[in-house]
Image 1: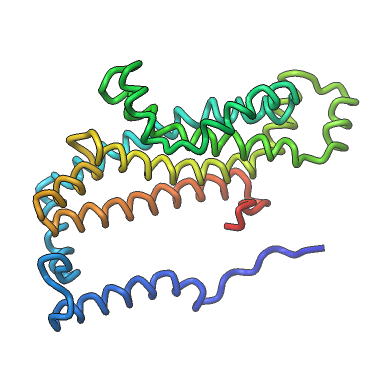
Image 2: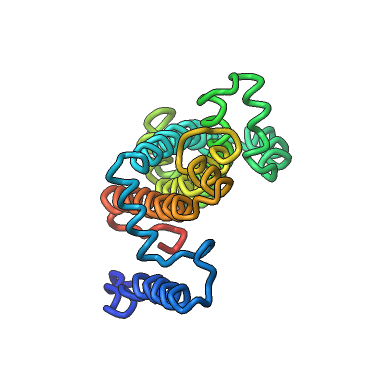
Length: 261
């Protein structure tokens, strides 16, 4: 019988903070000593000061807000049909056999390549950008949900059926709760990929958003803006994943993430 997981020790808790700080210190020292070209690798303290200026004048917050809204829309667009399709594939072999070939040929295609297709159908606006960003996340959520259903103890399903669980009751009381750890794993992966693809699509076709700020700053050699955008993207990604993990711990306090988090 396994006990409750022990809390991480102080060194394990802090190593994730100390290692990037050491990298920044080394960068600061190398830039100050002239080992790095300041035109391309300015000192982190200068970048931080510039990022604060962008935050105070509202421009960084505006770009971050636009990107956050796009990520939220893409994630929602992927999550609801992804869970539904994944549950259907896990329950029904016919559905799984029918969709597997389509998934096999579509999933390996980088999501950003669907942007022209969605632009033809939805127009070259926000809808096409969001739909493109949702593609990979949809597949990840669907696959992990399907796996969650397939990994369920068949004895539990048979017992629920024996005691009269059918249709909506079987779904709400047995299938969905049983697959939740896998669904949250798919959500965590899908949220990360939604952010990645949103940034990529913004770099390719948008005028606003952190990806657009990053790309335009690089093109104009506004290096401080570029690094400020990179930092904001990192903070946004970390913050979104932290909030999702917080939700998982609240809803599934008894079970860790099957991804090993």
